[in-house]
Image 1: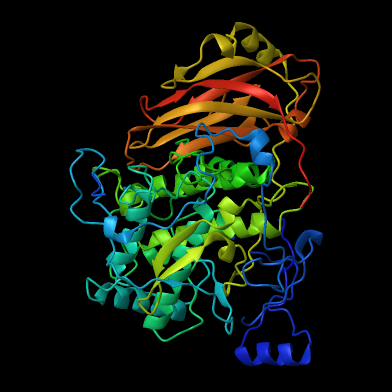
Image 2 (image 1 turned 90 degrees about the vertical axis):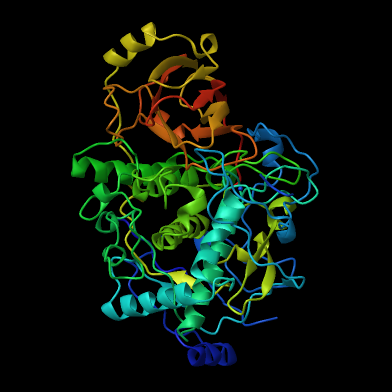
Length: 587
């Protein structure tokens, strides 16, 4: 199985760290073996962690706090967005998203009835807000794989969650208050300040990863303080590795504080998570599908940082400009797979407003954050060449959270780009998907015959996708050029689970198998509520590797198959086309 070596030296104790700083010596790496790796109606100047540059990148400056000895902090998009923006919402005020006004928070809305939820998602209010500065890193919190934790860790984790649940209901650190953070930011309780009734939404854009990283950061620190352990770290659900592709056992004990009865009872262990949501009952095929999905969303399908992180989202623009590969892929699948179909809106994990009520949410999102970390620093630059976003509207976007001391703090994106500087890291785990490139596709007869019968994309779009659709799409140029498949003006009902898989020149039409060269990627969403039912977005899928694995050099068109994994309508595709990929700069 593929694995990568540790990125840098970590200090296991404050004493060791202090010794290293004072003597300029290099303590031994925590992991010596290179064979391991780590993973919404409204009312309207510190200790430095020194690490080696990853993938040959040079250390960079944090322009808000002077020089920081760090590994490749800023990653970005720069001027590329202007040329390659696929979002339907154009640049508005050219300002970053501002933190919400808590005193103007409204109640969220039930997805099915349109009535108010039984609980108000709004947090306690206070007039005192502090601009948060990351504290000195005295102890590195190492987040472990949930499938590899010790009984002692499980006991400590249970105790921390139990104490969080026992806090007064109006304590912002209380378990339900913490769960409501996700409801407020993700289900429309907040407006963008000064922008009328425009929702503030942290999903389906480049804010997805930074928001959730800060969310977990404070959640983790609250738990650590409640049990008096500054080294406590959240576990991650290692669903990208076959050994972690079941619900972590410590979350399914009915006597545990980690238990939530609102989960899909058919998907309890030993059921293997289906990241493709194909419904395939062959466990081995599900595992191979999962590994192919991980390779595709992490490496094969991305041309720029935007493709992985999500489309730009600025002040004054409509929410949901477009999700990145990881958010619309494995992230969404795990939410929906765990959500309880017996509940009206797939509560808890299967809906944004209720997701944080399941302790497993934080474990799931720890692995989502791990994917960002892997993508930022450890994937080879020749496979993922463009990983930097330097746009000020990204870097200066801000959120509000309560910290472990019940203080309301303002945080920015630029201060969460480096997990080590925030004081946490991940246990090293093998990455079996790293080299899980599907085998080449050589057969042509069936594809050629099917293509001749398929209509040109320009003749049928826009189309409501309630069944499998096959269309011919002209290539940008002959040969195996670097090209992108664009699904544009995607209009969705945000209150529904929606998922569409995309295949190119699929030779066998077996839609339940994804481990093949023809699988190009996916679009999916977790149900949530916005100020209007329909939103438009766009995605693009990189075709370079796919073309390399197919005999398409002499073809003028390719056959694109769109496979809906959801029931009924709810999604309309405005158009589909292939464009030449813009040039990228190596990270």
